Length: 385
Image 1: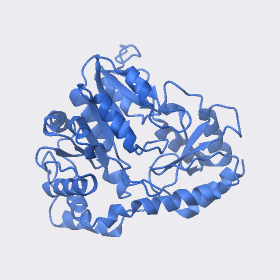
Image 2 (image 1 turned 90 degrees about the vertical axis):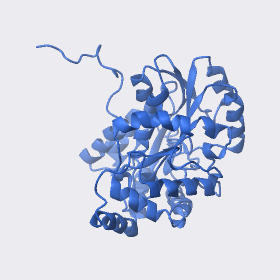
Image 3 (image 1 turned 180 degrees about the vertical axis):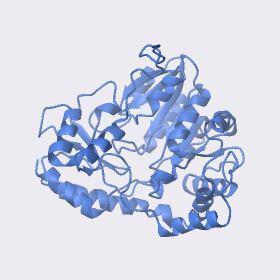
Image 4 (image 1 turned 45 degrees about the vertical axis):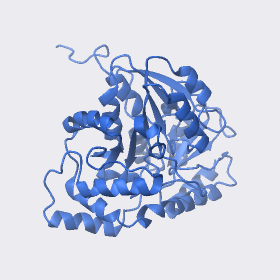
């Protein structure tokens, strides 16, 4: 029998099942509390559910326009303008996507050609690398700083060559919870000025940022917005990850290329949900109150773990918290995560799958987008180590 697909013919021979799917499956097998995959265990707003039902009943059930429902694009443009003082053209610069992952795939695929170099800052969300490889690009990995997980711009500068085509930025950052500062924005402007470097800015946690900080979107930089695909997600913002709707905001010339790919990947996105989001966005409190909502959960979990043997530096954003287990065990993070799931009853995510350069860190990631009862039970189990 012919071997139609062999390791030699695979386009992604080194890519395996994602760590999120792996740990969630293990959590189910061992009846462990699942703090691994990043989704809330509580439902989205009843008002939002009713809006979806309303638009379904009213017959908004056929294809949406390829770029997305106009009303939703208008609300996104207004929101970005209000928060970051930059207005995107609703017709030519905003595209609704089937989640942020599709937007990331489309943005990278639209511009990366064979042998183009793409700088990926590690730890990095696991969807970036496969898309670069699928398009024949060459990933160039740069680690965030060891202690604070801040952006190491000197190393980024050293990594730039005449073949550098793209830099992928993620803030608030998954999995570390770090965020861009005003100084970061300034340096990023300087190092990309007078270059052809494009930026993919993954900002899906833009509304989950803590301790009185404000999210710094690349859309708010006059310079950087001209070279950036800014990507966000309604699923993260409105506790509706399963609906898989996000968006990409980019200048007209970049959006034109983006849509060339987008139309043949999904063409259009769920129609009634787009209308529901558009109406729901008319009340800013639905996203402006999110930082306080999630900071309470972050602080609740940290307080529970205050007497544990984990070392904890509070996340500055996202709904993830890193736990340093270096005072507990010397085993690698994958083995530690497996042990946690099987023996302690809490499924977590090891950090090494987010890295290619440094897999030695004794860190695990937990998701605190959970009800307090779940966080309490998980915390008690973690404290028992």
